[in-house]
Amino acid sequence: MAESVTIARPYAEALFQVAKESGKLGQWSALVATLGQVAANDEVRAAIGDPNVDAGQLVGFFKAACGKAVDAGLTNFIQLLSDNGRLGVLPEIADLYESYKQAEEGTKEAEIVSAFPIDDKQVKALVPQLEAVFKTRLEPRVAVDHELIGGIKVIVGDQMLDASVRGKLDAMAVALNN
Image 1 (cartoon, rainbow, N blue to C red):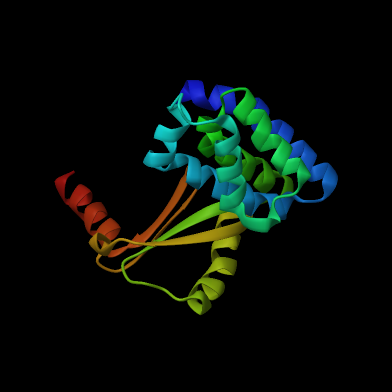
Image 2 (cartoon, rainbow, N blue to C red):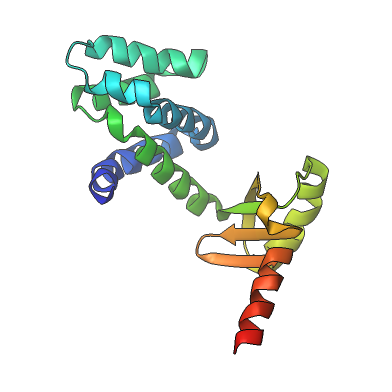
């Protein structure tokens, strides 16, 4: 994993710089995320490593996965990765690109894990409160984990706010055992 991130870093930095200079940070963010998801698929990974699959076919496949939104800059990037045999590190490139974008915008990704599904209205009401706690702008991503029993757990970078029933029960168990 560390090796693939090391390989991906210069590509992600270059892509980020080009996107920033062209004013397409947000537009390319979604496209690069799509490319990363496609490259992470097991069947696509097998095709990338298959010497019988033509590089031009792979480039065409990745461009088609993004639809008509792919411009010349992103097409050149996909071609460059193909020429250098680096299409397999697209998931890492996508992760790094997103982290550079968030740093540029002064935001962080917040993973909100809830015991029950929460709708967009609830998330919008919750985010300002979480931004005050974490002292940064947040981009929320919601997941459901029924093992929490109730409440939520929020993870931002290496910080965690556990306001779940499971977290409180675990804390009480630790306190009783000490």
